[in-house]
Length: 253
Ligand code: PGA
Image 1: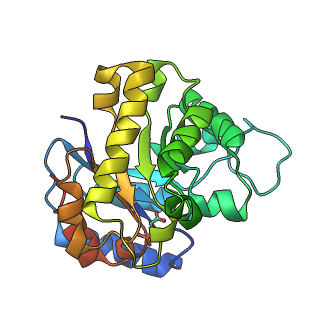
Image 2 (image 1 turned 30 degrees about the vertical axis):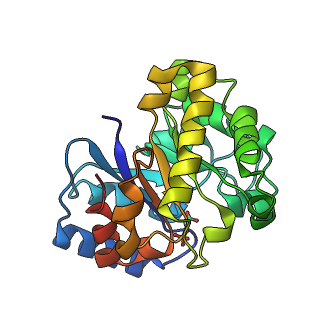
């Protein structure tokens, strides 16, 4: 069975003390995680190292950065390289979040470069895709998401692709309290898997975890994750509360 994943995306939230408090609460509540399940904590850069240390006390937990730069090293003030992340033991990197596409003008082509440099440093990309409301209303979301995947991921060979996690996050559902229905999530996840299967074959498509993101909460996680092609969630707001996030973890199949 492919990995079922509860991934937290803290975004630009929490000061250091609150972040450590959240880690300590998660540890004290000791979530139960089966061997085919995984927790990933996507945290701000200054907290990566202490969270990596504390995460050793959580079962099957890896840590993700929320971005990295396209270039290997050099005069890029304020940026963080994949090599830096690798050197401190980060395992995953969230790439192409809709907030980065919107506010920082990240394009599919730029994300292809970030995916490459991440994989070259043994970082597994959590590649985000998903359509804005206007595309959903025009009912062209399947083509929109397919283009995002093709332009940023489909240059990879199958061994590289298999090391990526895909997160489908419809933009109209992020931080809005408006969750896609389980049926809408399943429809898009099945489409994504089908698009992968057409280029890489069913075995590869079957091995890739596809997470749903967009207003996942303790109360709706289990229903979303019960869909056959929904392999867990990428969780923003609800990952900032330990009890809520643990309920989401316990909603994994
Ligand atoms: P949300 O964010 O859970 O707060 O909607 C999800 C995300 O943006 O990854």
